[in-house]
Image: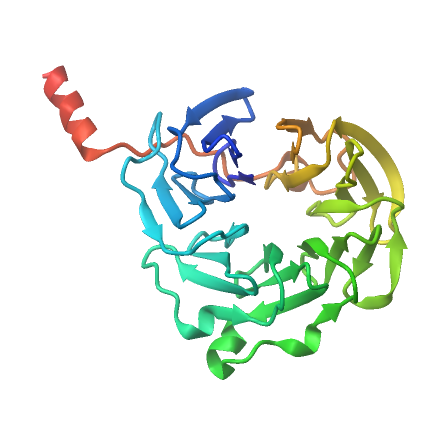
Length: 322
C-alpha cells in the first residue's frame, strides 16, 4: 500500500493478483487492474500520481496511470520477489529490496542503477525503507535486527556505507522504521520484541506490551502512530505522545494484524491495511491548535486534477469530435 502526495489517491495490491487505486476524498474505487500473471508483493505510488510500481514474483512492473486504467505495456525490471519498494519524496529515485540482503536504488526516468546505488549490509530480508527528507539517502530495517542509514552522496564518493550510525538489537526481527524530520540519522523502529526503540538509545526500548508491525510519525513530531501485528489478535492503532511515548489513545481497527500503514502528506488521513483484507481510512481530527495555520490545513499547493492519456486516444477523440 502507498499514498500519493499530489492527488487524493491510495494504491493497494493483494493476493487476488490485482492493483487497485482508491480515492480517499470520495471514498470510491477509481481504477482496478486486470488480473495479473502472478501475485503482487509490493506497490509504490509516484508522488505525481501518474505512475505506479508493482512487484510480482519474477519482475517489477512500472505502469502509467491513465484516466480510467493502467497502461497496457508496462516497463519491467528483472528483480524477483521484491517485497519492499519506496519512491523518494521527489519521485526521481526509487529503492527496492533486492534479493535477500540488499537494496538497489534506481533512477526512475532512466532505470539506471550504478554500483554506488547498490546498497549492501543487511544479512537477511529488508522489511522497511524510509527516505530522508532531502532524498540524499534512506533508512532501512530488516529481520536481522539491524537499522542502517545509507547516505547516497557519501556512498558515491567512497563506495562505502555510512556505518558509524548503525543501530542493532540481537534476536529481534525489525518490521518498520520511521525517520524523525529535521533530525538526521534519528529514527523510531519496532519489531517482534514488543518495544519501540529510538536509534540514539540502544539500551532502553519503550515497552509497548504488544508486537507493533507498522509506524507513522506526524509532521510536527508530536504523535507517533503504531499499528499492532500480534498474531491471533485484532489489529489496533496506538497513538503515543512524542518524545516521552506516553500512550494517548487506542483505536480498534482490523480483525487481524495490520500489515501496512501510511499517512497522507498533509497529515489529515491515516490508512491501514490488514491481513483481514480491509483498507481503512481514518480521519485525523485532533490536530494541534497551536501549530501554524499552514500546517493545520495541510498542503499550501492544491491537489492535482490532471490525468495522463494516450496520444492515440486523443487523436480518436479529436477525429470523433470533428
